[in-house]
Length: 405
Image (cartoon, rainbow, N blue to C red; front, side, top):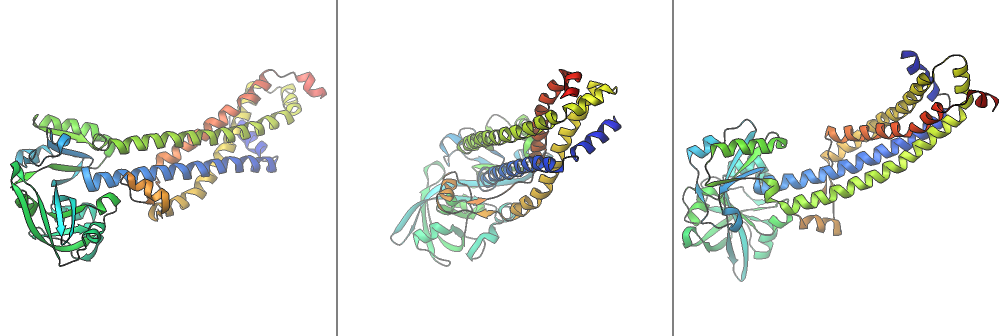
């Protein structure tokens, strides 16, 4: 076997120009495939991350029936029993929230807003809200003040130190009305939230909506999101039927559908790209086989078995593919690594289309190992498929005819 591998290695360098051309074509395919898939996977991860951190969490626990109507009446008390039910090795973060709606008014300007009552310290650990403050200061646990999203503040014409009147409906129909000091203006990464969100301390929101010690939901962050289904089952076994335990996919169906449809389009484009490269590799291997007919005939005439020649040609093709893959990864990885930590900002129609799905208008890139593994496997498969032609030629080989040619 070692002899066959050595012969294959020497053979691919006998015609350096042909080898480099073949490697270049495979390298370009690998580069484009890695770049495209990294961009797609990075965009999906960014959309999911925004959705789970700023909204639902990977898993959300709420009272049964809440998700259908989002009513403040469908709240629950966060007991020690519920807290102990959420002790799981895969759960890294528990964030209680009270979410509802209100009418915000400042002077002549009025708008319907989303009010989120949360634990400021926990929220800051998860979403780094304090670093998103563009004016004023971040709220504290016992503050009777609010944070207003940047675009909402512009619409209502309010600034730090101004007062904002909130009017809504509290628990069991009680009127919720109060005036709050604007302590800070916050820039939310999701454009939709940036036009309608008001954040206040959890205790103050519970007082405002007359729902003392009550929550609308508990958002959970996970160590390994791939194990979400197993985690949900463990939580459901500990909780009773009064509560719903929902995964983020079920709460963000539109986003999931958008990701799936876009992913199918990306796979089709990759398939077309690899078909083109496959024909290029096939053409090279075919040409290499036709040129070496006399060489193969001499090798068979001196006693070399056809099976070993077949194995040698397979090794030659696989080596070409592996060399091109290694070159492609070496060149592509630093580029993707840079873009992973420095996402490309978007503007224009592309940015607007991303805002529709609640995604931050940037183009992030992923560097997950499966992206590189999948492309490596794809190129190797193409190389193995391309070698079928020389195999068929060698199996039907006429030694005497090839020697006379």
